Length: 133
Image (cartoon, rainbow, N blue to C red; front, side, top):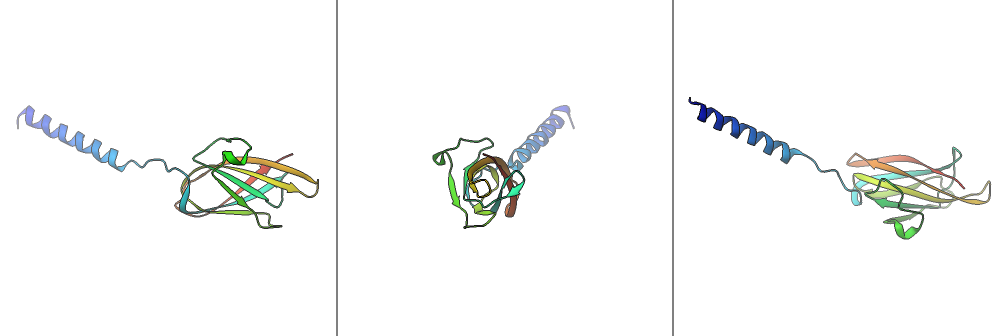
């Protein structure tokens, strides 16, 4: 074989390899509804679980969008007296979870948030949401 034929074969192999690499790359998932994941949020004030009144979720976010409800994509009201709030139907991706609760031991509203990344395609993910005065 001459050099030109060999170079053409090498070029074809490299081109094919790059094509396979590009096609097989998986995009980072964007969070949102329509998935099979459930976030189970446990608000904690000074390390103690408290009933979760309201959980706000921002999709595709790693930082807090603020403290107003309109800044979030979803609002989930917790069951009365429960120390957890379940947020079902989420896709893989990044979320910012913000909790607004009432701590009956100090008779005061407490709030706070935390970023979370869901990497699995289905199941439950427990998270502890730190809240403070």
